[in-house]
Length: 358
Image (cartoon, rainbow, N blue to C red):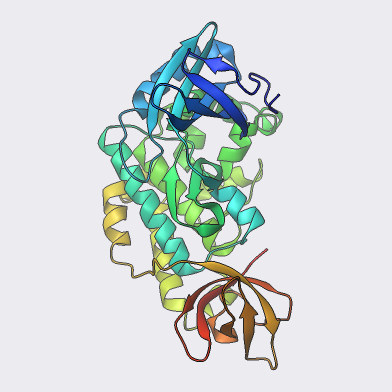
């Protein structure tokens, strides 16, 4: 048996998709790994927990299938089998961005944050070109290819956009208890634009741009811009983005790029939707950033002989680490786990940037 409610291992869906594993579930759907027996490839099979949502799920599947971009998980098929209905999506090997922030690093350095934002903006622009609005962008709906390898990024779950819109709209239109009882609404709230809270059904493309700004703030600082839960609502509606803490901009190796990313954030999170950039304009702004696409790796500080420098061990070789290359931290100690890019050097490779890891 899988850990899911709907299916066990080896169940056959639609006469074509054989369940091979259970991936997980969110507030609205269960997700399985399946083998497409016709095309002989693996895929992700998603089905809503609410079997009465068929019409909305079907509409969402049709909409999501319009989007074709490397930064968006591809919708491959829609299947009805008995009284159940399913979305078949590209299988992404990795983890969601929320998982990455919780289990690997709690915040990204500005260069990594800029890379993530650029990829999200490109995926969002592709969806907006075909008039598909996500309305539920959040870290758990962004997949990190390769997980720890940090190889790329894809927006997912366009396929439940219509379902999410209705549940979120009902929750925020009610009282505090109604909001906090909806896992979907509670998870979406920290990334909601002011107009989404005021009138979910009429929130348009600018609400997605706001969400990218809120996500970028979180990955850059390790904190959601307005917190979470019902108390975040008036802060979101006021739309005053908190300044970056001094620890994030006090290091001259990071400050210019952090300031550039923060400018993007505040531009995306303007209270008036008409003053926010379009997704295309956000892509153009991100193209002015200069960030590295070199591989990242994890290591552990093995020596730190003084307050300025030391060495980290990795799976390949030791790496020289200097405190000035560490983002948002003023000290390193033996045993600290770090995330970094290691550059060629003699006698040891040199790390920059360095972020403390979980």
